[in-house]
Length: 245
Image (cartoon, rainbow, N blue to C red; front, top):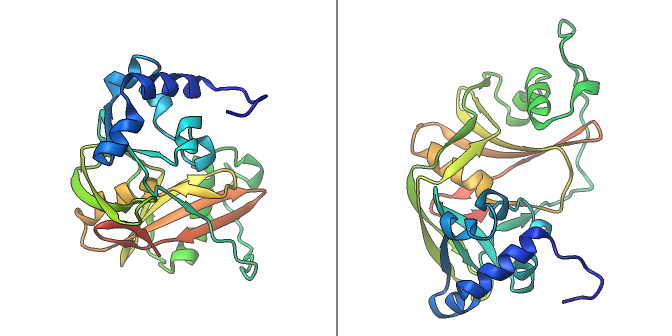
């Protein structure tokens, strides 16, 4: 442990959990450790201890041991050497395209974009979503919290390089924005700051839910609004594994 670095409340609570439940030994012996929200709550609220949108947010012991945590039900999680984050690919050749809100819109302006929800509203209203997805029929449909339903998938193990299986049963998911057009349903994860990476399951779990509910193509999109610029990334998934293209 480096000198001069301050432990966060999550660092301290997870250190106690790692010791109490011998998490590292379980990962070594079984390949993963399953832990419940009830167990986590013994030391700190699970809702504060289990959602890390970027690698940099992970507690110290997770970083030091190259671990990640993924939900597998509404109240349980799996910890292992999961390849759970993906770096953003930054292209120097990307064009910046200008967009504007319709002239009859006065309730929002670019100066009012102070949240991810407003950023999504402006992107839709200005036609950015329709232009990016090449679908003029887009309309806002699904959003908010919902259950993941039941599915299984495989994710790469960073130590072995092999794909390991996980089963998910009614985990809670949240969709920032869903837009349905003539040929697709776009599922959008929105952020209001630039980062090096993102947590892939934020797109994959909603993708798996909605591929089982609609016959149209489900298009996962990551959107970042920062410094008055929208950055949009479209992904495609293997239907049974967290592998991105």
